[in-house]
Image 1: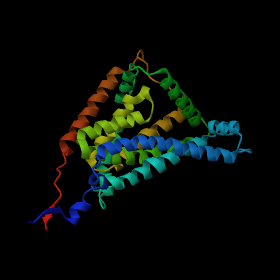
Image 2: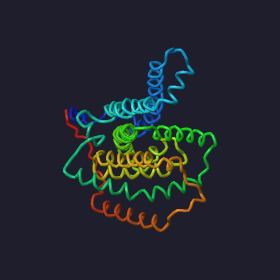
Image 3: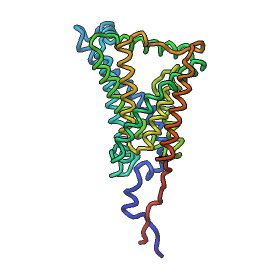
Image 4: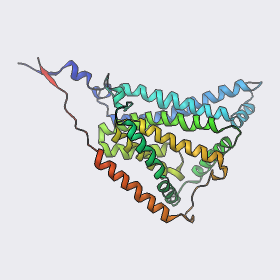
Length: 317
């Protein structure tokens, strides 16, 4: 009696996770938590080692803490080291477990085709037009209750960032560490590995929305979680339409880089969270939101297609 077994090609078309019964979406969410822990551990170690090299007595804890609080470049390199080693390289490594050999670049959509440049243009336009919507969501976020300890933690982070961006000759350093590095590393992780894994497990829309909210929560800024999640969803949608993470990388760079430039030129803009009583330019916000959703509708009608999955081939032996 003949039995059916997967051919060599069908085995190779299944990832290590799938062969061993792991759900891709669940493993991606687990990786997010592990990555955040590793990011803080590695960044902390880099910061301590760098500070120890800057003080006369490496055993002087107070001197080390002073260096960490005062040296702008140390803080930047702590963040950048964690971004590169964990978010980028770490996510590329776990992609080896989630995607079959030979399909890993396409799995995280690290690819360029003839339409990529067109979607880069769309990504830039949509990101710029989304700012009024982001402001509205920031105002809406002000109505959500935030625990005191979380508000204090965010205020400390904001004060540190304000101090960093207020230093002399900081613009180019800020554009590199806050603009360029996160736009590459975070996109590889969130729009690359995490989004695609969620798609494979639970479908396109769940992947777009859930990956967006994970991105918003990852920043640990609860007073801005809604606008950050909205940007994450926008970047995820652009990534799916273009089948490439390059447009989202550019959009991320435009967003972060623009904030660095504005914050450097106008320091008074820092730490200005919206409050429920804040008066917003409602007419401009409504007009911008109408334009944004009109453009998204055009894009959706032109380019949105649900994927068609096929079963692996089998052969008779």
